[in-house]
Structures are given as C-alpha cells and as structure tokens.
Length: 185
Image 1 (cartoon, rainbow, N blue to C red):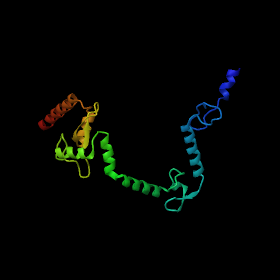
Image 2: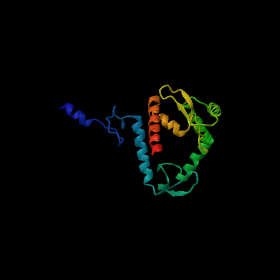
Image 3: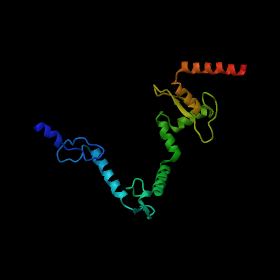
Image 4: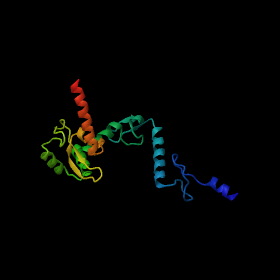
C-alpha cells in the first residue's frame, strides 16, 4: 500500500511545459533550465497583461503589442535599431563573412589570394559572380579540406552530386545524349 501512495505523492516540476519528477524535496523545478523557463513564462504573462509601457530608448509610452517579447525593455523599432548598431560595431557584412570563412580554416586574406589566383572567376565554369556576390568556398565534405572557389551553381551541382565523379560523368553523358536528340530534330 505504501508503494502505491509514494508514486502519487511525488512532486512534479513547476514548469508548465515539463512535468518531470523533482529530484530533491523542497525544490519546485527539476533543473535550473526549467526554473529559468518557468520564470520567463511568468514574466511574459505579467507583461502581456499590461496595456502599455515606456520604451527604454525612445521614452515613448507604447502598447504592449509593440514589444517582442513583451518583457523586452525596448519597443520593436528601437530594438531593431540597436541590433543594427551592434552589427555595424562588430564590422557588419565583412565581419560575418570573415566569421563564416573560419569554418573552412580560411582568413579573408587567404580568400582574396585564392580569388586573385582564379582571376575572380569560378574554378569550374569560369564565370564571374554577379555584382555584389562572392564565390563559394568549395571543400571536401569528408576531410574538410578546402579546394577552390566556385560560383553558386557549380557548388550546388557538386554538392547535389555528393562529390561523386562517376555521378557527374554520368550526368554529363546524359545531357550530351539528350542534346544530340534535340539537334537531330
């Protein structure tokens, strides 16, 4: 009889989205993560009941619908402006691109050297990228070693062919075979 009651008396996590048992007595939540999530839920509910509040940056009283999430101290236009200032402070597009190049083990200078060596053109088709666009860094998906710089379409073609030379040759033969049928008509 005692075992049957123990299961019913076991405390459950106070986070509405969890429901796991609480490991220690006198605790409300099963983990720190659940406690933080429950606090965010409570705070959002409290703020969503407010009809309006004053933005920290523009000092205007605005309806709560202008705040996302509702507990944010800044209205949406001020939040977007702050994000834009932070983005530009970090270096903007160039910072983001240099950060992305790091995943291939390249610096911006190494990328520029590769680009100059290829005369600014795709290593496969020889086309220049459209104005304002960059060539993609091609890499071996198994080893991670970088190869050359490719236009978007050649990079997609290699990726979709799973870097398989047999598949690419078969695709070329297929296209040539069907090209011959079109010119014969």
